[in-house]
Length: 146
Image (cartoon, rainbow, N blue to C red; front, side):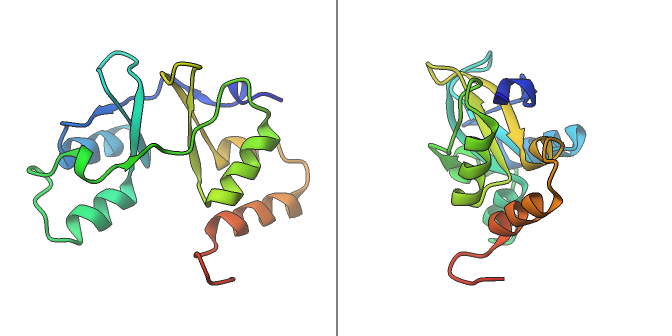
């Protein structure tokens, strides 16, 4: 099965210049934990990704004012991505190896097309033990086994 069959299409995105507060408000409104960062407003090229954890740990916990911090200052640049035509098994492996719960889906020229999450993929797994292993691998802190 291909990623394009299970991904969330056309995710809402932010620009590098948007504030951390704007990103957090969008996440709350959309009930999502990640926003792709693009270089232009209309289906731009993916340049980064920001998570709710980035905003919490990198802005709020650091004592910064979220209305004065740009998303570009707290995003992850050059995130791990996949293509719509990638096999789901490949993306599972990418999530495990990189300890990621969500991966942006980009076109051949790096335009954002969607997001695929471990929850999207969990619906496809017939073997609960396999899914449990995947979640364990994704969640394991670096350098410390669970």
